[in-house]
Amino acid sequence: MTTRRHFLRQTALGAGALAVPPSFGALAGITPPKRFVFIRKSNGIRPNEVALPTFTAAEKNLDSKKEAFECDLDKHELPTWLQPIAAHKANLSILQGLSCKMSENGHWSYSSVMGAFKSGRNSLSGIKRATIDFELAKLAPSPFGHVELSLTGNYSTFRTGIVSGYSAPAPHQRNYCYADPETAYNELFKAVTNPEAVDSDNEMLSFLEGEEALKADILEGYEKLKLSNHIDSIDALRARNAKLKKMSGSIAKHLPKLDPIHANGGPNASTPEKQEAMTDILVAALITGLTNVVTYTIDELSTPIKGLKGNESDHISIHELGHNGGYSGIPADEIREKIRVGHMEQVNTIVERLKATPEGKGTMFDHTVVMYFPENGEGHHSHGTEAPFIVLTGDQSNLNMAGRYIRLPYHATKGHKTIGNWYTTLLNAYGNPIAHYGDFDLETARKKINQTGAITQLMRA
Image 1 (spheres, rainbow, N blue to C red):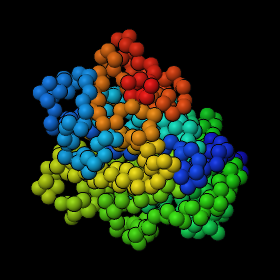
Image 2 (image 1 turned 90 degrees about the vertical axis):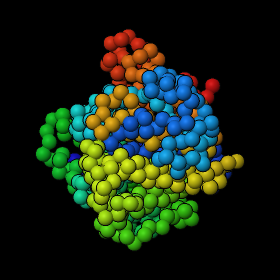
Image 3 (image 1 turned 90 degrees about the horizontal axis):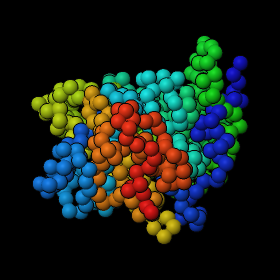
């Protein structure tokens, strides 16, 4: 029988994530850690939506034909929905031309877009490897190792509590995530807000012990073995909590303020209010050193959109928008853009606050990479031929791509790059010399086009 002592093996709460003390950058006077923020959004990003409105005729021709080229962002205006981050244009990269056909496309990608594999929809057996965020977390250890947040639901209500996430710590394992701001706040900062509960059974353990142990009792053979791999010693959790107690003074200085509207899961909070609260928690988790890697599903097709500016009285379905359904006389495309604008306002908040936080000889943002991307590719019913990435990198980044619009060769043409190449680039740039991360694209392979390795033009020499 599975015992409590064996829960959480090989997850971010395992002993391996606790082997290196947390880094506090300027707070502790040591070499700052590298940080990564992954922001997943639903409904795709259509490549024309990130094309620059002030392209020259030659650039517009190349972009429309999906031929490789680069141009400087400081010579162009950004699309309307990217205007909230226009002040950070020197740190911004618009990366076009990556494909994600080796992951799940269509409506949802589940874990696959972060791991560059086919997952067979939402199954444990389809999780082929640790997702890229967990691989990067190994290179930037912290008490939590990795934090996952999500704002998803069942179209009418939001998920709440601690629930199954979309990232994966290892093959055949699914991460957990915080599904509402109150839960994230209580679990991440309880060393300050509720210190007497730090060593007690908490909501996270209740989730794992209740839901996962129940499943383990009814599964047999290989399926039970896969689930048993999701377990570790409760002692590892207590070791982490001991570290959190020592950090409580530093955590208290940067504790976010949570509006009372988020109590009890925040049933009356609007979607923008939930997003703002999650952003506050995300930034505080980075500044306090609780984690150096955050994955945030800012929305998915089942996320209820309530209180959107200009559509405050509407209960908007993202899925319906994908089928060109408008609300209150406003066309679907306009509402989709408003949703993206709201996302970019949150990205701007993350960048602004990290830039305002001193660290070493600069700021926390100097050592941070923020990525915003579609979980399923180029459209609502996507095929995975394109997956645009919006990337913001600090001045001390190991990447060399800031301030540029970069279009890579189109899918299955010479020189084409996949999300696997992009993730390999991140790993190689930050200390993992892996030859290639992720599965290969089958059509590109049939054409005998080399697709192994990093995108070297995006890395510092």
